Length: 66
Image (cartoon, rainbow, N blue to C red; front, side, top):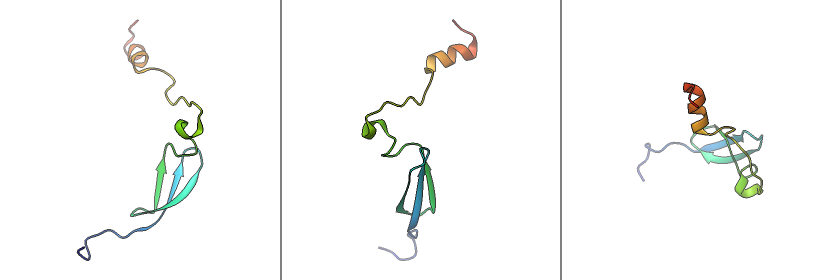
């Protein structure tokens, strides 16, 4: 590996929207994510609706269509 061209790795604090935080190695000091293993439906077994309305319904409402 060539010296002087690779980014420096540091401890990165990752924060999820659910409030869960953990640390990883990254070239950025902080990261914010939307889902993690504590709140993702695959791992929790619970369904969570992020989108309350469908895309077609939003389109129809936006343009006043039936």
